[in-house]
Length: 226
Image (cartoon, rainbow, N blue to C red; front, side, top):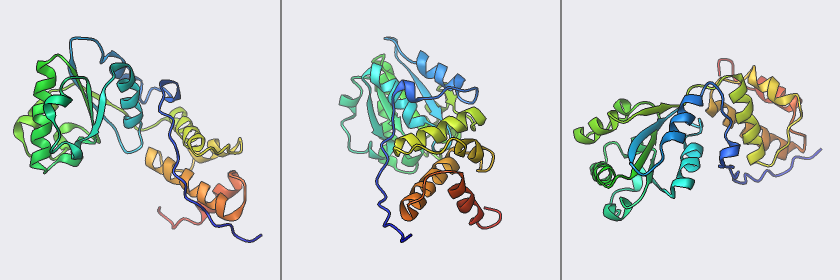
C-alpha cells in the first residue's frame, strides 16, 4: 500500500472538570485546587512534570473563579493593576526566571492580588525553590505558598492520560492497545504524549489502524536504551 502524506493537525485538548481523571497520584493536588475558592483570597502553587495536567487543572479552577490566565513570560509590560482586579492564573512561572521585568511584574501582581483578597494560582515544574528566580522577595513569597504537587502517574492515571490523548486527536484505539502501552512506555506524561503522537503519525502515513501491532513496530524501532 502506498504511503499517505501525514498532516500533523493540532489536537484539541478537552479541559473540562469531567475530563480530568483523579487517581492517588493527583488526588491531593485536585483537592487543594477545589478548596482554592471563596472571597477571602489566597495563593497556591500547582507543580508537576510536563503533561501532568497543570494547564488542565488551571482551566478547571479558572472557570468558576472567572480567572484570567496568562503565561509568566508575557507579564512584562502588562497592566498589573488591571490584572489584579480578579482571580489570576500565572502559567509556567519558571519561564520568567532571569527576566527581571517579568519577575518584578509577578511580584507586584502577587502583592496586589493578596492585598485585594483575590486568588493567585501559579503553575510550574517542581517546587518554587528550584525555579531559578533571581528576585529574592518573589522567591520567598512563592516558597511560602501552599504547594499542590501532581505526582508521577500510577497505572490507572497513565491509562486515563493515554485515553484522553487519543480522544483529543479523535482516535479510537484498539481495546488492547492502552493496557499494552502502560506496561511498556516510560512512566511519564511526556512519554505518553510522545507515543500517542507517534502512533497518530504512523497510522496516517501507513493507513493502518492505531492498535497494538503498530505500537509493537514503533517500540521495536526505538534505539536500545531509549
